[in-house]
Image (cartoon, rainbow, N blue to C red; front, side):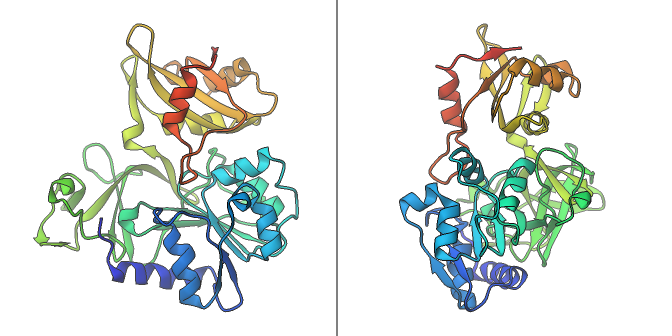
Length: 354
């Protein structure tokens, strides 16, 4: 998909200033070049006159050791790295004294992950970022307050916060009406001009006028009307810390006749004090019906206790029929949780029924 120079320029101008990047700073390059987030590592460093430090393969498995050895000041990665470092016992308090900025993007950042990382880098500003490639790497940011009392109400994951300058948001419900909870739509300088294949643009843009939202992709070739909103496909809710990410719309499933959001089940699982991370999946059941199952990580977990606690907060149809406890969640080449690998794992792993 094409992302225009002006969108990248606006993004870099914002993040270089916001994250205080300048001469003498040292940024880590943790993303493969095929991953759009690598643009931040490369061009923010070069654009600010900072130093880009490329880790070796072994350094990716020991991020705190790499940060300390190379005196990294800014580190950007997916949140799964935190879980990996914790499992390998490499996230000790105060182990990253040079780190001033810690940025996470690509998947939900849990409160447990953020707390553990902050303890290891107490002098670091910690931000959670969100955004699809279509909106130029990341389009929202949330900075965790230093005072725990100012944290938003616990929801399992850190809010994604407010939009970057030059962007506008529209949250619409299933009927296309403005709502406090629904699909996030965005327009502005970081919005891409449309997919290379015109057929892919169908249904991905909205025109909203006089309280009516409808699919539209009008404008000149390669440059749709600037008034059009890009549909992210992500469900959000307005909260105290700005926007809260509730999961993908395409992660909505129907179980026993009820439509539910897998992200909401995952958020409630992560709220359990013993659960580190959690993933919910919809899999074919023995009789061909869809069943809801879940996987989690953590120490000393009794699956029955976790499911009982979940039952106190959610309706019965949202309770997983089985819970599997793993030492860690499998990751794909970009460091994100590999849901397909989890599906394969569940085919051979004994699950704990409720």
